[in-house]
Length: 364
Image (cartoon, rainbow, N blue to C red; front, top):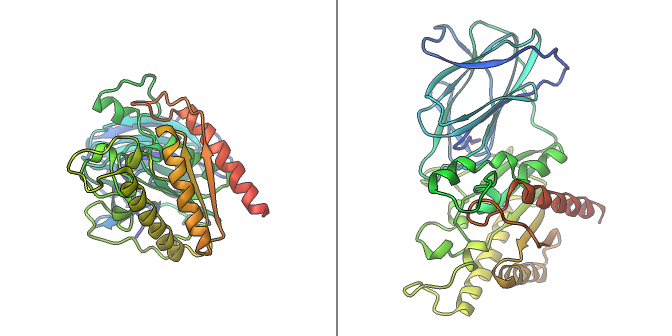
């Protein structure tokens, strides 16, 4: 099933050069009774609900639709989220914790418009719902085809975009939430460069076998196979076949010291568990995506421990016969986002390295 995730950014991009009017968005207390739902293409892990709604939890999910007309409506659930509303390639609103209900986007030029809704925030606490797009009368609409390329980005807070738009490193919990913007991370930037659809399958604080500070929760490989974090439904979309899978995992495994009571008594035990579990995870991903290029990258944090361990994992997989696998060390990031996380400037730097790496791999 395709999904949608916690914060939704509505982007309406037009591919046929409409004249730009003055689009505006407003909450509608009494929406028209005869709203006609548009056909929506959702990219990311989401599960459909009755009445043309979608529920999602992984970050970065987006929805797109196309129609002809001068106004369109969207419905938002009651769960907290951050949304960017973009009309014909231009953002008309950023909505932080928008009021639940129906919104009208009016003032559109006559002609065809392409709607896009992206998720910008992280919602680990629970899924969010999106009620789809609709018009007040029957209109011409055209189903949008998938893009010719697909890319997947798997990781932790660095992939999510934890506090990446913050102007300071010291942030409250609420400031982290409001300054997290997955749409501005390296994943969407790389996908945009290659004209690709993308999935962001990442959870802040999670690692391969160990979470940040040793806190108890499913590590990323345990949560990865499922549509939502409740693990009730497996993600088995046959139409999702990325040609590139970018992974960054290990920061949370190694950036904090071991605590008494954790199952690893020494760093060597943690290394061995990390390597074996990561190798097994990559093996399962290869079975899922047999033709994809895998790109594993790591920062120089934790005195190089993360990069050293990721290198070992890559070497082990290559010794097992894996050919389409590249390791990329990325050093010298400023880390000026919340709690010493990558900023949007860092995201651009990461994207630049990954774009060059993927291009070089295509030549080989």
